Image (cartoon, rainbow, N blue to C red; front, side):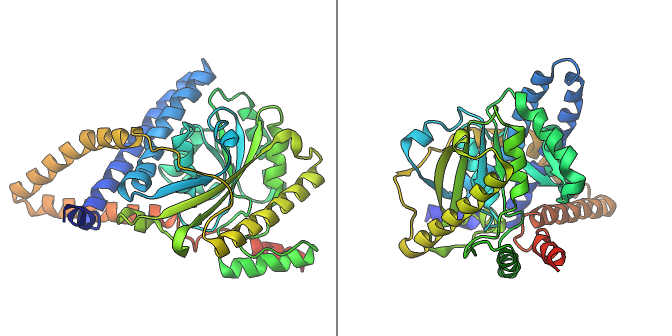
Length: 378
């Protein structure tokens, strides 16, 4: 009965609004502090980086908390112990499939459990730089932003990646080589491109975009030790959403993880690209196994959840919700129509902001990569 009541509470909009308020306001405070840390850059670049890793962790871990503790989603790794023992102890490139709305959260929860969430990196599309909290935080983390037009991005991407070669924290670079989330329409277009390039067709993935991977490998040669290939799926063919997580829905995420030492990956750009295409064929075979068997092959390992995400959220909730509740009570006690209307307007704006942030993750969003390729082909 108690569990049923807790599950009911998790569906209540007022709690969602309070959680969102904590995330947004704490994020703006963190962004302001990050702005202030810029004074460290010319004096001590590594100190700047270490401070910003922890500030970023304080923001991103709130989302991980929702996945791990609020929804109770379980993450199981299918890998060997030798690979697990390397996690959090080496710089690595992590290749993830891009099929689900919360695949980034599943990647982050593994980063969190092995202590690299604050220092995790991505190659992000330029539009995200304008998104408050997300883009702003990534800017201070030295995330490489690109327009996905190689002629325009080349110098910027190479310089940005090379600047990370002396990063002081253990760093995972999360790459979604497909470039955009999987949909049936994008898959059809992608397979037309595969046919035009005489490449094997994929059933569960889009054709990988090799330029970002090969460039990252070249720029961080001598820095990264391995490439981790991560293939994600959910039990019972669930297709989870961020809204589902917010409503407390529990999912079971399975992740097949394979480690490839960088010395086993070809240095030549063309051969490296072919290696990536072969990897995606193997990922497709893994997804086929999962479709048939309901799990990935190999030993199972469940990395334990850490308490820091909850403690961090409770800190921000204590700091921010007490004055908010006192202010709201004062507004309604005052009986002033102007104050009450203003407060309700503020709530409406907050709801809109939350919806826009969630919209960034929706699976229908994404690049028009496939269409662009078809245009080039024609």
